[in-house]
Image 1 (cartoon, one colour):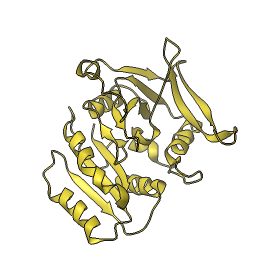
Image 2 (cartoon, rainbow, N blue to C red; image 1 turned 90 degrees about the horizontal axis):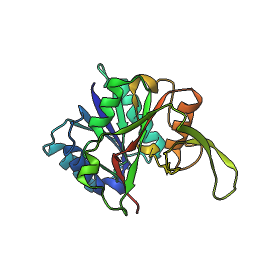
Image 3 (cartoon, rainbow, N blue to C red; image 1 turned 90 degrees about the vertical axis):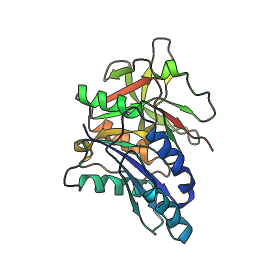
Length: 238
Protein backbone atom coordinates (compact mmCIF):
# COMPACT_ATOMS: atom_id res chain seq x y z
CA UNK A 1 0.00 0.00 0.00
CA UNK A 2 1.34 3.40 -1.01
CA UNK A 3 1.02 6.12 1.63
CA UNK A 4 1.13 9.90 1.32
CA UNK A 5 1.63 12.16 4.33
CA UNK A 6 -0.30 15.42 3.85
CA UNK A 7 0.85 18.52 5.73
CA UNK A 8 -1.30 21.68 5.68
CA UNK A 9 0.56 24.77 6.87
CA UNK A 10 0.95 28.52 6.43
CA UNK A 11 3.71 31.12 6.70
CA UNK A 12 3.37 31.44 10.48
CA UNK A 13 4.20 27.75 11.03
CA UNK A 14 7.01 27.20 8.54
CA UNK A 15 9.58 27.06 11.35
CA UNK A 16 8.04 23.80 12.58
CA UNK A 17 8.41 21.91 9.30
CA UNK A 18 12.04 20.71 9.71
CA UNK A 19 11.34 18.92 13.00
CA UNK A 20 8.16 17.34 11.60
CA UNK A 21 10.08 16.10 8.55
CA UNK A 22 12.76 14.72 10.86
CA UNK A 23 10.11 12.77 12.80
CA UNK A 24 8.81 11.37 9.49
CA UNK A 25 12.37 10.36 8.55
CA UNK A 26 12.54 8.38 11.81
CA UNK A 27 9.54 6.21 10.91
CA UNK A 28 9.87 2.43 10.90
CA UNK A 29 8.13 2.52 7.51
CA UNK A 30 8.77 5.40 5.13
CA UNK A 31 5.89 7.13 3.34
CA UNK A 32 5.88 7.03 -0.44
CA UNK A 33 5.55 10.80 -0.55
CA UNK A 34 5.13 13.86 1.66
CA UNK A 35 3.04 16.69 0.24
CA UNK A 36 3.05 20.09 1.96
CA UNK A 37 0.49 22.78 1.24
CA UNK A 38 1.83 26.17 2.34
CA UNK A 39 -0.33 29.30 2.13
CA UNK A 40 0.41 33.00 2.74
CA UNK A 41 3.87 32.56 1.19
CA UNK A 42 4.59 36.20 0.37
CA UNK A 43 8.20 37.04 1.27
CA UNK A 44 11.66 35.92 0.15
CA UNK A 45 12.21 34.48 3.64
CA UNK A 46 9.12 32.27 3.29
CA UNK A 47 10.32 30.94 -0.06
CA UNK A 48 13.83 30.42 1.32
CA UNK A 49 12.53 28.11 4.08
CA UNK A 50 10.60 26.01 1.58
CA UNK A 51 13.45 25.97 -0.94
CA UNK A 52 15.79 24.75 1.78
CA UNK A 53 13.44 21.87 2.52
CA UNK A 54 13.32 20.90 -1.16
CA UNK A 55 17.10 21.03 -1.51
CA UNK A 56 17.69 18.89 1.60
CA UNK A 57 18.06 15.12 1.53
CA UNK A 58 15.04 13.15 2.74
CA UNK A 59 14.44 9.37 2.70
CA UNK A 60 11.12 10.05 0.93
CA UNK A 61 10.00 12.39 -1.89
CA UNK A 62 8.79 15.85 -0.82
CA UNK A 63 6.48 18.06 -2.84
CA UNK A 64 5.45 21.56 -1.80
CA UNK A 65 2.31 23.27 -3.07
CA UNK A 66 2.76 26.94 -2.25
CA UNK A 67 0.47 29.90 -2.71
CA UNK A 68 0.63 33.57 -1.80
CA UNK A 69 -3.08 33.54 -0.95
CA UNK A 70 -4.14 33.66 2.68
CA UNK A 71 -6.10 30.43 3.02
CA UNK A 72 -7.84 28.70 5.85
CA UNK A 73 -6.86 25.32 7.26
CA UNK A 74 -9.84 23.79 5.44
CA UNK A 75 -8.74 25.30 2.12
CA UNK A 76 -5.21 23.99 2.59
CA UNK A 77 -6.51 20.52 3.42
CA UNK A 78 -8.84 20.53 0.41
CA UNK A 79 -5.97 21.57 -1.87
CA UNK A 80 -4.03 18.53 -0.65
CA UNK A 81 -6.99 16.22 -1.27
CA UNK A 82 -7.54 17.60 -4.76
CA UNK A 83 -3.84 17.27 -5.59
CA UNK A 84 -3.64 13.63 -4.53
CA UNK A 85 -6.91 12.66 -6.16
CA UNK A 86 -5.66 14.21 -9.39
CA UNK A 87 -2.44 12.21 -9.57
CA UNK A 88 -2.14 9.66 -12.38
CA UNK A 89 -1.33 7.00 -9.77
CA UNK A 90 -2.69 8.29 -6.45
CA UNK A 91 -1.51 6.73 -3.19
CA UNK A 92 -4.08 4.46 -1.58
CA UNK A 93 -3.65 5.92 1.92
CA UNK A 94 -3.70 9.61 2.82
CA UNK A 95 -2.50 10.56 6.30
CA UNK A 96 -2.85 14.13 7.56
CA UNK A 97 -0.68 15.76 10.19
CA UNK A 98 -0.38 19.42 11.19
CA UNK A 99 2.98 21.04 10.61
CA UNK A 100 3.56 21.88 14.29
CA UNK A 101 2.97 18.29 15.45
CA UNK A 102 5.25 15.24 15.38
CA UNK A 103 5.01 11.59 14.43
CA UNK A 104 5.97 8.88 16.86
CA UNK A 105 8.16 6.20 15.21
CA UNK A 106 5.61 3.51 14.22
CA UNK A 107 2.76 5.70 13.03
CA UNK A 108 2.97 4.97 9.31
CA UNK A 109 3.78 1.29 9.85
CA UNK A 110 0.71 0.75 12.03
CA UNK A 111 -1.62 2.79 9.82
CA UNK A 112 -0.59 0.88 6.71
CA UNK A 113 -0.91 -2.48 8.48
CA UNK A 114 -4.47 -1.66 9.55
CA UNK A 115 -5.47 -0.50 6.08
CA UNK A 116 -3.84 -3.53 4.45
CA UNK A 117 -5.50 -6.08 6.75
CA UNK A 118 -8.98 -4.56 7.20
CA UNK A 119 -11.60 -2.90 5.06
CA UNK A 120 -12.09 0.23 7.16
CA UNK A 121 -12.48 3.57 5.40
CA UNK A 122 -10.67 5.75 7.94
CA UNK A 123 -8.49 5.63 11.04
CA UNK A 124 -8.23 7.91 14.04
CA UNK A 125 -5.71 7.28 16.77
CA UNK A 126 -4.44 8.29 20.15
CA UNK A 127 -1.75 10.85 20.88
CA UNK A 128 0.21 12.50 23.66
CA UNK A 129 0.56 16.24 24.03
CA UNK A 130 3.83 18.12 24.00
CA UNK A 131 3.36 18.77 27.73
CA UNK A 132 3.13 15.07 28.61
CA UNK A 133 6.04 12.64 29.00
CA UNK A 134 6.90 10.70 25.85
CA UNK A 135 5.92 7.05 26.38
CA UNK A 136 8.65 4.49 26.94
CA UNK A 137 10.15 2.71 23.95
CA UNK A 138 8.70 -0.55 25.24
CA UNK A 139 5.20 0.92 25.19
CA UNK A 140 5.69 2.47 21.74
CA UNK A 141 6.81 -0.93 20.43
CA UNK A 142 3.89 -2.82 22.00
CA UNK A 143 1.27 -4.46 19.76
CA UNK A 144 -1.36 -1.90 18.76
CA UNK A 145 -4.84 -2.01 20.26
CA UNK A 146 -7.20 -1.63 17.31
CA UNK A 147 -10.97 -1.22 17.67
CA UNK A 148 -13.11 -1.46 14.55
CA UNK A 149 -16.75 -0.37 14.71
CA UNK A 150 -17.34 -2.27 17.93
CA UNK A 151 -19.64 -1.32 20.78
CA UNK A 152 -16.61 0.24 22.47
CA UNK A 153 -16.21 2.66 19.56
CA UNK A 154 -18.89 5.32 19.47
CA UNK A 155 -19.69 8.74 18.07
CA UNK A 156 -21.16 11.49 20.17
CA UNK A 157 -22.02 15.13 19.49
CA UNK A 158 -19.65 17.67 20.97
CA UNK A 159 -21.28 20.06 23.42
CA UNK A 160 -20.06 23.65 23.17
CA UNK A 161 -18.33 24.88 26.31
CA UNK A 162 -19.68 28.37 25.49
CA UNK A 163 -23.34 27.82 24.58
CA UNK A 164 -23.92 24.42 26.15
CA UNK A 165 -25.55 23.29 22.90
CA UNK A 166 -24.42 20.35 20.81
CA UNK A 167 -22.39 21.38 17.79
CA UNK A 168 -23.00 19.77 14.38
CA UNK A 169 -19.96 17.51 14.55
CA UNK A 170 -19.03 14.38 16.42
CA UNK A 171 -16.18 12.97 18.40
CA UNK A 172 -14.94 9.50 17.58
CA UNK A 173 -14.54 8.01 21.05
CA UNK A 174 -13.31 4.82 22.62
CA UNK A 175 -14.12 3.76 26.17
CA UNK A 176 -11.64 1.24 27.52
CA UNK A 177 -12.39 -1.49 30.05
CA UNK A 178 -11.59 0.81 32.97
CA UNK A 179 -14.18 3.35 31.84
CA UNK A 180 -11.54 5.80 30.63
CA UNK A 181 -12.31 7.71 27.45
CA UNK A 182 -9.44 7.64 24.97
CA UNK A 183 -8.72 10.76 22.95
CA UNK A 184 -8.30 10.89 19.20
CA UNK A 185 -6.85 13.58 16.96
CA UNK A 186 -9.16 14.53 14.09
CA UNK A 187 -6.47 16.64 12.46
CA UNK A 188 -4.36 13.50 12.05
CA UNK A 189 -7.04 11.45 10.33
CA UNK A 190 -5.88 8.82 7.83
CA UNK A 191 -8.16 7.46 5.14
CA UNK A 192 -8.29 5.71 1.82
CA UNK A 193 -8.11 8.05 -1.16
CA UNK A 194 -11.20 6.31 -2.52
CA UNK A 195 -13.09 7.33 0.63
CA UNK A 196 -12.42 11.04 0.05
CA UNK A 197 -14.48 11.34 -3.12
CA UNK A 198 -17.51 13.52 -2.48
CA UNK A 199 -16.09 14.88 0.78
CA UNK A 200 -14.24 18.09 1.61
CA UNK A 201 -13.19 20.11 4.64
CA UNK A 202 -15.53 22.92 5.67
CA UNK A 203 -15.04 26.28 7.40
CA UNK A 204 -18.64 26.32 8.62
CA UNK A 205 -17.34 26.57 12.19
CA UNK A 206 -13.92 28.20 12.57
CA UNK A 207 -10.99 26.03 13.63
CA UNK A 208 -12.88 22.73 13.70
CA UNK A 209 -12.63 21.84 10.01
CA UNK A 210 -11.15 18.46 10.91
CA UNK A 211 -13.96 17.55 13.31
CA UNK A 212 -16.58 18.62 10.74
CA UNK A 213 -14.87 16.39 8.18
CA UNK A 214 -14.94 13.38 10.52
CA UNK A 215 -18.58 14.11 11.28
CA UNK A 216 -19.47 14.02 7.58
CA UNK A 217 -17.76 10.62 7.28
CA UNK A 218 -19.72 9.38 10.31
CA UNK A 219 -23.03 10.57 8.85
CA UNK A 220 -22.18 8.79 5.59
CA UNK A 221 -21.72 5.53 7.55
CA UNK A 222 -18.04 5.21 6.73
CA UNK A 223 -16.27 2.63 8.86
CA UNK A 224 -13.61 3.66 11.36
CA UNK A 225 -10.77 2.03 13.22
CA UNK A 226 -9.62 3.57 16.48
CA UNK A 227 -6.03 2.83 17.54
CA UNK A 228 -6.04 3.47 21.28
CA UNK A 229 -2.49 2.27 22.02
CA UNK A 230 0.27 3.04 21.46
CA UNK A 231 -0.08 6.76 20.70
CA UNK A 232 1.05 7.59 17.18
CA UNK A 233 1.61 11.35 17.36
CA UNK A 234 2.68 14.20 19.57
CA UNK A 235 0.11 17.01 19.55
CA UNK A 236 1.80 20.36 20.17
CA UNK A 237 0.28 22.72 22.72
CA UNK A 238 1.42 26.33 22.24
